[in-house]
Image (tube, rainbow over all chains, first blue to last red; front, side, top):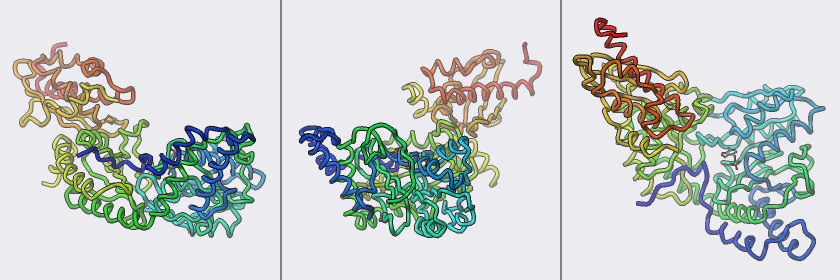
Length: 392
Length: 127
Ligand SMILES: Cc1ncc(COP(=O)(O)O)c(C=O)c1O
Ligand code: FES
């Protein structure tokens, strides 16, 4: 069997549709989309068609879509741009403890610039309570930023409810939808968001391209200063191949959303059930139903996540973990801690993320490979010994 | 990111397990990331006849445990006490900087097991 790639939340393979859409942009459509000559105009046409496609997939207007270098830039732009543009109105930002670092570290940096940030807790499933969002609002609040879907545990947040609250209080609402776009239906109007971040490489588009949706009339400062690209809001020569590839990938994902979603939910639940049945003491992280169709996140006590990943890798499976040892900072994932997991349980977390090309055979193979790996690692774990001795 | 030697010791760790009625046992924990390493020693005539380990930790922690046990097996207690994490890392062709603390755990676990033995056999302590 070929390698099994179950790390689609980290990144995805570029789909054939995106690749073939991009190819002309590395050939005859090489022009600078801001040039007025024929070559420039040709590139401009590709770029604007891509913008229309992305807008249509989100129920937005084309002029509300700004291409960026990816999810991190979109998040930085939205949060910093809204904060500084509305400084006269107030200095308070509401977010959650489980945001991606692109939002969290941006908020922490803003605190150093004199802004005040409320990091709302989540429940055991990783859900934010919209009532808590409303209760956190003060007359100084200028921005609410809550992610649409969590990248680690897959929990889908109640963005539409939060959108209503934000609107009622006339506060800008941003959502990091990097994991949601292309995976679940996204509608900027139904959600009531003023800004939304997305990233091409999470739905089989290329890397290094993303977009920020900004609702017409929202006050958001420019982030990348320079040329007049993106209607003067974001400098830098337009990444036409990226935008075109991302648009093609998104179009495909959205067209097949329902069918793929149902198929992936089946596979996901088969994988979850299989792990919980075959690996003693394993537990599911995140919400059992309100979760991304492709996300499986389990904690496997008495084994350490990096060792588990390396063993799976040797067996040909690519996965991910929120373990302290894999984090670089040697702290366990902030998301797993926020849902209340003790350090040692967060330590044994395993994330397997599926996509539309995942198969039942792959799921079965992982279910065959995982239990003996866990058994081997537990066999060499002093914590497991202590646990078994404590049971006697 | 790991050397071939690290991956070899991780995939096929030497001396995993425990020794019943061990002469010395050392358990150390890693304050940094929360990992645990336990070493068991069988000592005869001042020589480490057998050594086994159990580790809850990352690839580097498992590989350094494995390498450390190989490095002290058949050695005197004094030699075992002189084992450094640097020597273990060198024997493994190096570790990524964020994983240096894991090798420290291996050094500490060996030392703790020897110290445990010496606690019960103070007459063998030679300074
Ligand atoms: C929820 C979320 N936000 C932001 C990002 C950052 O996206 P990018 O890698 O495109 O900068 C990611 C990707 O890791 C993500 O999962
Ligand atoms: S044991 Fe945690 S990083 Fe090595």
